[in-house]
Length: 571
Image 1: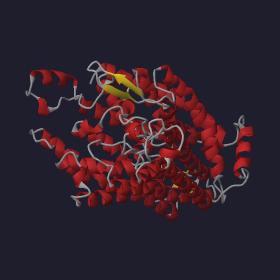
Image 2: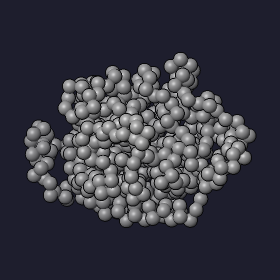
Image 3: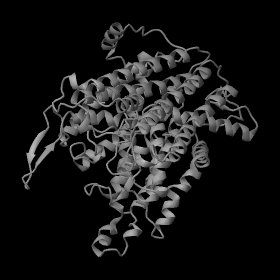
Image 4: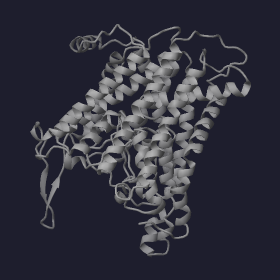
């Protein structure tokens, strides 16, 4: 750990806060109808799609629209993958994607997970990358933002049966927010050397007189929305460790910055739309505390040399003196690898500039735990905010129990139905992870045969796969062959459940809150804009996460760390 590494972290945080504040205000104005400079374009789109923009939806209509839209877009992407051999812009003459892999990938990009059990440059044509995958990068991110805004409206509205119009919210999300930002930052990335073309792959002659195929394509345009929409799926298999996706320290900074930009800004949007800016900043403070703690843990763990290499070879030991460099790009080093890993697992992004499978056990445990918290530490665009608001409702309920009063949240009394929907949301996430992971470890032929490592590290690889899928993160430990019938099928269902089955109770909560009257604050009302509330919210998140996942973590990375100190390795 160095001063330079901490300085880079501090600069990152300052730039993020400085930029997310005006963006958050802008988004609040967009979703409250105060920004209308693209209204003519909106009207054309609504007319072409048969959308009645002035009509609002109940929570059930809103949820049905999300599910139907996502189902159709999933089927469209599946068809594009299967038929890419007859579609245009397939200069490499790739065949259609295998059925189970196509299903898994379509589910992945529909859910904003972007889990990839394939090497993009060796499987997907340019048309599939653009019309199937990058298309979903915009739309799945827009769906997440729309769902978060619907919940905020439910909090704000009084005695209302509706929470907005899904089609309008989704259109405004990509038209006013995602598309303009991506156009700007795609050009910034191009200026840094990120590739953007439709050329066929280049065949180059090496100094050893061998032929090397150099993949390229429309990378910058996909890279911008990949990070900004917390999608994470890389054009290349090496993702943001590839020099065509992430060539310079500045491009690395920009990509990390984009991962948190909208999710952080939505906390400001929350404060503006609810009329309680302090509440938005209290939620942001909770996210920032957990982010800083995660970065500190990963940075510390990766700054330690691997004890298994101590004394093996003097040259190897000297290379490890600056920390664990296995699986990391030397141009980024330990600090930027740790920061990228923390940001991408705090958000449901999944882009990586280093291989998490090569992290030290405690470093790997931390990035795994980041996702286990529910992808709420900034989280995915939209999904991070509504996931955090679920914990806000839970925290307010606990605070009410402690003082013996009916819990209130921004003028709304929290009743039994609200708590039931909140707990349903909280319980679905660990249930699907632990059930699928448990079944997998009991299946040597289908589950364990995909592992590159045995013992507790192998358990962590399996656990990480299902945690990443359920959390719609998409990153991987990279030590697991997930392109098998079992993993393609089960992770596909895990991603769909982790996205949509959790979204439904959240929207039910929004609808119930919108129907309620507002009650004036009383001396017993627990304020949600104070440092005390931030501490309570942080504590609830950590306690729920620790009680749920500590047993399985103790069998995986914690056990591996203890054994590594005694020279025990797993291969």
